[in-house]
Length: 192
Image (cartoon, rainbow, N blue to C red; front, side, top):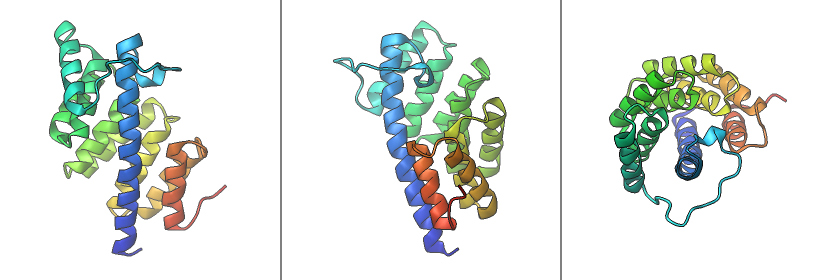
């Protein structure tokens, strides 16, 4: 696989991650405002009139939540998400670590911590966090997509294919499943 193929994979992943991240961040904020639940727990979300619109507003929202309860794992993860959106991966990783300390079952924070560490040039440590998250919930589709991305960008395409195949199998008709399918297509196909 040539350099152009890797660049295409990175671009597709970043696009999928950005779109998914923005959507997930919006759903988390709205869900927390109305039901005080993480996005994984929210089934139907109604959009409030004054929902925070940008990362700065989201940071302010979660700062206030942390003033009320400095140990709130949902608010800690929300701060991590906002810093991630601002590409402040060091700060994001600090908040994801705190969220995991408060809630070791928070597989989404393991995923996001792994990706933050990867973007900080600490791919090995990032992959270790992803593996810990997989142990918490092997059925969490997005973490398999992230695992494949980290592996592919570090030159481990065979292992990346296996991770993306797993992500695809967990939900071929989801946004994550379609992204995994596209990555697999670039590397030689999806096994049905």
